[in-house]
Length: 470
Image 1 (cartoon, rainbow, N blue to C red):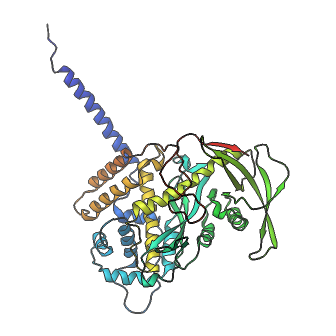
Image 2: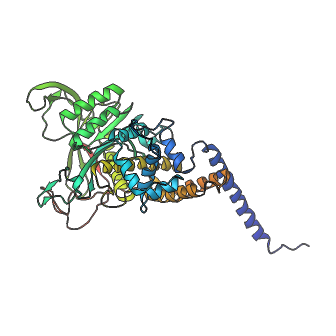
Image 3: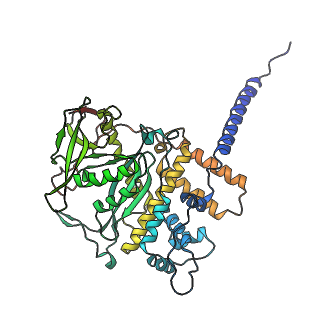
C-alpha cells in the first residue's frame, strides 16, 4: 500500500501558484501586444505623440546665424522642467539632449520667443481624446462633456511685473500680481482642449470668449454664473451652432426674460432672453433658450435655487431633472485646477520673473497636464474611469520612468523598455483611488472680501443631494 507523500499538498499549492502566475504573464503579454502601438517610450516620444504628427511652430527667421539649440528642443525641455520639483531648466535640458544649455542662454531664448508661437503650440497640441465606447463617463447621450472656467496664478513682485494690476480686497491690494488663465476642459479626462493666458492684461471674460472658437463638434459646454448673462449666451450660441454643439450655463438670478408658451411637461420652460448692445439699453436680438429652475437640498442645510439655461430645447431628449444633475460635473474643472496648481506646479508662485516668461510657464503646465491625461487614459485601458487613476501618483511614476528612459536609452533593449512600460501601467492601475463619496463643504471663506460668511472651523457634510424642479 502506497503512502501519501507529506509534500503532496505543498506541490499542489505550488502548482496552483504557477498556474496563476502563468495566467498573469499571459495577460501581461496580451495587454502588451494589444497596446504596443499606443505605448510610447520616453518623454520625447510622448511629447511628439501629443502633436499627432503635426509640425511644431517655429519662430520667424531673423538676421544672423541660426541658433545652436532649436526652438523645438526648448519647448520639450520647458514642459519637462515644469513636471519636476527640483532642478533648473538647463539641467533638465541636459537630461533630454546631448547639447548643453546654460541658464542665461535659456532665459535669453525664452525672452526672444513671441507669444504667438506658444499660442500656436497649444493650438496644435490640445485636442479631444475621449471615445464613446472606452470612456462613457466623458459623454452624456452622445454629447462630449466640456467645461470652461478661469483661474489666477501668482507672480513674483519684480519690476517687470509692475504693469499687472493687483486685486483689491477689504484689506487693501493683494500681495502678488496675478495673471489670468482660462481653459476649455474635457471633463471626464481632465484633458485641456484649449487655453488662453492673459499675459496682455485681458480679463477672464475676454479670454473665455476667445476659446469659444475652438469648441469641437457634438459637445455640451458647462459654465458657471460668471458667464450666465445674455452677452455670453449669445456668443456661445453662435459658436455652438457653427459646430453642432450645445451649452448648459448657470444663469444669474436678476436677469429678466419672457416666457414663450407654458411650462413644458418636465417643469422647464422656453424663454426669450434679450441681448442689448454694449453700453446701451437697446435690444439687438432675442435668444430662445430653455430655462430650468431647480432646488438643490441636503438634509440639515438650506435649499439652494439654481437657474440654468440650455440650448437643448427638447424635454424628451434632455429631461430637466437629468440635465440639472449633469451640471454638477462642472465642478471637475475646479479639481483640474487643483491638480495643476497644488500637485504639478512647484510652489505657490510661478518661477518666472517676467510676464512673458510666466505666460510661457503656464502654457507648459497646460501641455504637461495634457501629457498626464494621456498616460492616465492608457493606464485605465477602458476598464475603469480614467479619473480613478491618481494624478499625483501617475506624475511621480512618470518622473521616474522618463528619467530612466532618458539616461539609459543606450543601455536598455526594446524588450526591456516594453516590460518597463507594462509594469508602469500596471502599477498606475494598482494605485487607483476609490470612488468619490458625496460631500458638501460650507460656502464660506477664511478671509471674506465681501458678504461671504467667515469660515472658522473646517467641516463637510455627507448624505444624498436632492434635486427638485421648481
